[in-house]
Image (tube, rainbow, N blue to C red; front, top):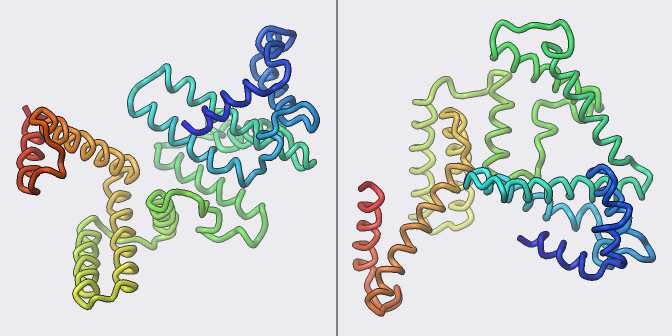
Length: 289
């Protein structure tokens, strides 16, 4: 993990790191201790050179990476790793909040206060007297509240799709975009229509491939993937999780090929494609048995 390596580096070069582990800070509430550590790391004089240089933009890739690390730990059901990864993700929030506080924009407490207010506001059935007949009604009320919040942020952000983050993974963003559009009636009526569109996009992609037009083929491939995202939404499947599972399956089966060849003193480069296909089939059979 990249950020974990950075954390090791910080401990090794931050002044008085022993004090942080065993000194007065150790008696604080954990969150207060973490906030103070962040202040020390960003101290213009005695802080960590690497941490002092960071900005929102330079830290953002680590934030995304840590979120994926959390998802990975959950998929592996590794609770010890999940504890560590949640800590790394929390550190990202603290890091961004500290940069903002230094700029006079907001502080960590403002982040927490805003979150608490939003959760209370969006759960009137828990914190007020509202009631809903079904989960669907509750979801509709949640989305209506979010729409009001978007509108309150300004007319320039009042559109249905306006606040779907551009930095999301493309497949995830496609699902969110189409889910938003579906809420106002812009959607295929059923799964069958999505499948028809999928076949149509495959045919259009084939036309451009046959024509040798790489630019148009790339565009058609994008359209095909977008329909796949819609298909995932209709099936109530997370396309990112589905693709991660496919990646794991491919890795597992290809590793089987390498292992079997290694037993024969060979590598994939030494054998034919058919030999590897046969070992791939063997791996599939072993998974079913």
